[in-house]
Amino acid sequence: MLFRVVRPMRRDGSRFPLFVQRIPADVRRKAVGLELAIPLGDGFVFVTLTEGAQAVRFSLRTTEPSEVKTRQALAAAYLESVWAALRNDAPVHLSHRQATALAGELYRVWADSESRARSVAMVHTPGVGWTPDIDSQDEQEAQWAAVVAMWEKVGKDGDPKHLEKPLGPIVDRLLLTKGIRRVDSETRAMLLVAFWMALRDAFMSRQRNAGGDYAPDLKAARFPDWQAPEGALKEKPKRGASKNSLTGLVEDWWKEAKQAGRKQSTYESYRNSMARLVTFLKHDTASRVTPEDIVRFKDYRVQSGVSPKTVKDSDLAGMKTVLGWAVVNRRLPSNPAEGITIKVGKPRKLRSKGFYDSEAIAILKHAREFVPGREAPKMAAAKRWVPWLCAFTGARVGEMIQIRKEDIRREGKLWVLHVTPEAGPVKTDEGKRSFLRTYAVERGDGMRCPP
Image 1: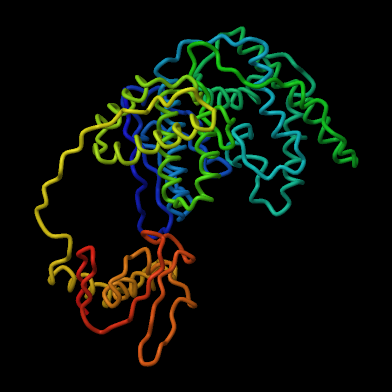
Image 2: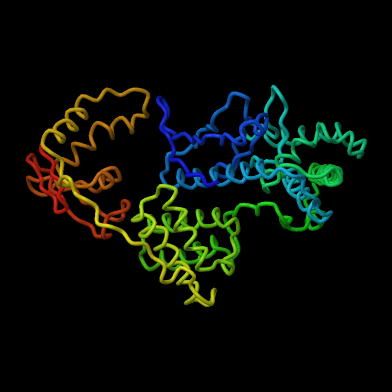
């Protein structure tokens, strides 16, 4: 089943957008009680699904538009892997190497005495919360206390029967990030022992650090890289992926394209399109992508309700550009997106681009009479003044929002506003001057603003 990624929602009384995704009806009963560790920025947000929960909701904790899109996409991709794991919940068998690799994630979190990041490998204490607590003023001491407390619970006995209660929830959360809901009994026991050994080694590492020994950690090298078993979802792509991955190609293309003057917004569009392709294919290996994969992805996007124009001008254009760059730079033998397109009909225009006088007057009247609520002072000022600045100058909203103090000056009797790419994104990347007038301005693109 395919799911459309919903857009972030706005909340009254908060400047941060809200992530909301409905829990699919066919997995809702299986999801009750799950503790989800959803990626959010450089850390995680932890959500427990209750019996009455109809949707997953949490704050995206940022107002940066590009970061909102990234966090929204990563959270949606994670949840899709969770729903898929719940549908395919037949027990999975892992090898000893895979169990050790998974335990390595626990080790790397608990052995680092200077870690500041939350992780899915943290411990959740009912009524207390997640530890180590990065919000604590004495976070290093809190981390060490958490390690000691955990080791006191499990250190004396490595019997899997006694490890299930303290370590089982961590095992479950880490498995879920790999698209695995359950494992067989043999694998379960092996995982619990592997986690116990990892925690033992992490405890010893922290003791060395506490004693002033920060020599290179040889124990960390014993954990292999994770490789997904047959039948399980591949792990979601991570930032900083290898140069042979789709996400890695986007980043390398951008290093060159940025120097050539391509816009940040173009990079963000191409990056998001490639992330959606990775989620759709369930792998991040560029050499495995075929033209048939691109066609299936194109059809999937259209069937999900995305406009053909967006698919053509954003998704397909981004993939053709990045994969074509990879061919030129000898990273791929051929471009699987080459020649694939979609027919876009000319939309019907039922009205002109510009505002009717009544519409423009209503906007400006609302801005003039705006009464600040719980918004931040800068947001309240923007709601009050940006519409009027657009009316007086004929400039775009984005251009006005990014205006700096040094961009306004007086020339004789006239006040001049300088719109420049130095302040932020500007269409055509060309600076322009706008005189602050007291009469209507007719812009070249049809936007008409009265005083």
